Length: 485
Image 1 (cartoon, rainbow, N blue to C red):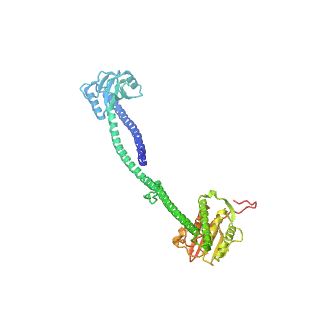
Image 2: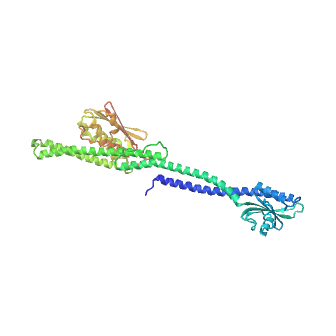
């Protein structure tokens, strides 16, 4: 079973948050326990010193085993929260802070090893029951009681606090922390779930749109939420891709329709006239005329197939596949004019060529650029008015050469300008004029120039149409004949 991305992201985020929470809790519990123990130790240390001082000075006027002294110890114990135990120099308990009439620990003996540690001066603090004196394990601190007037050992004082008291205090702190942490953790999970789901919504929309693309519906788009993060960029790129796919699908449909139309017309003519000749419908004295029409349509079919093959070859050509070399663009223009001389004469056109006397060396695929120039001049001839003129110009500007082809004829409508480089596009929608053309010439020109990273511009007004394209100038050659860098 596949899990959605937002569920996986939520699990991942929740796991990270939960592990971080566990780590934070562990650190807090250890830190808080040490803090509480440290505070407790400091309080016990201060209290122990005060009690020892009290015993030293009180023993000069009071019997430490008396009831009054025990009452004083009990008062100190209640105010500090620590139990007090007094022993003699041999470790025998002689008094305590217990509130009972008789101290229940009197006569009990503190283990000698404990007394040794207390007497060593290194301090005694540990969890112990003092050899069974206490019924439970307590946190105990012990100090020696030195008599003031002769500096002899008078006895020992042990201050104790039940572990339960310390644990209870720690639990209170931990309880508050856990309660706050649980609320924060819950809110974090909720916010994480909402945000991850919200982040995944555009991806779900894209998946839905992609499935509709697979069914041939290219009209769907992902709603743009105005985000500027990676999801927003992906949404923008996806919609841009959808626009491109929709255009490509429209071009594909138009391409099929146009090819079908271009093939259908000559094939219908050829089939009809051939059948007419074979079944005798066309009399013998008219057959030559119709055979010439059949020949013309056959040649037109041949040109269509050849142009489609050229289009396919050019479309599959990448910039890396171009045979780049240095060539004279002036020579290319002159040769193209010579090749089209018959068509120029047939329409009675004058040719005005403004070409530099010196060679203009450009860099690119010479054969491809020859086809560009040929197609543009051929296009100018087709749409030029009879007995008018076509003008060709070549000039240099910076590191580029500019070639323009101009003719006098019908103005291209403004709404047609963005479409003239499309496949099979013809300004004459009825296709009754210029039957020699099939609407691929300018498309081939644009594709070749795009492969060369060159530009082409079109202007058309007041019956004058001009195509201008750019070429990158070749680096000047060195004296040894090699191109300069």
